[in-house]
Length: 111
Image (cartoon, rainbow, N blue to C red):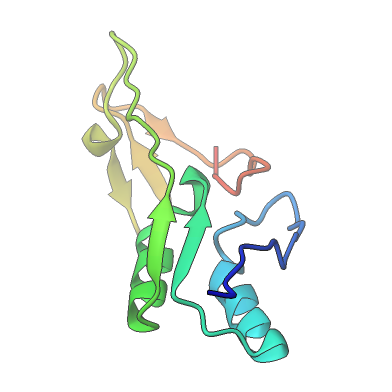
């Protein structure tokens, strides 16, 4: 039927920017540049974000995404147990300790 699967983009982002941030813009650029009629995309679990899902759905594109099994170490707090203070831009742990920003990981997460 003339269809084929090819890789059309390999992109390196800065260490403090998560790969999923520029993904949809790059997808749009490929569509325009190569005149693609994109119906499906396959990406790894790192792109399984609400923003990416929303944007590809708006474009009527079906996404096949890897699944990352939630992990939780016994004896540690759940992420949802921390309280964020928008005014002070910090979190308070369930034991009342205030956590302050130290650095940003290569994946774009603040620690």
